Length: 119
Image (cartoon, rainbow, N blue to C red; front, side):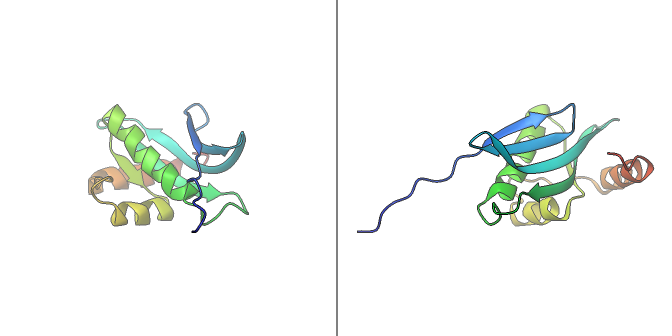
């Protein structure tokens, strides 16, 4: 009989002040979505970049982060603009969890990021 392994648990925390949604394992950050909050009407959460630390790839960390990012936006009642290529691909694969942002909102997010690259 094969030994059953428990699924890996990640502690995901939002650090809104720094614009990072972080995944922790055993107290150590192993992945992050860098994002910013787009002001305006409607407001939006804009995913800019997803990174998983070397040695932790392929374990579902990036997917868990993007899923949590969409859930967080849903609780806040705002759309997600996935400028991050990984987040955009994840959204395409999970349309039931990742409503598509209006095209004009995506364009506004691109303009804001271009004019404020520090975001």
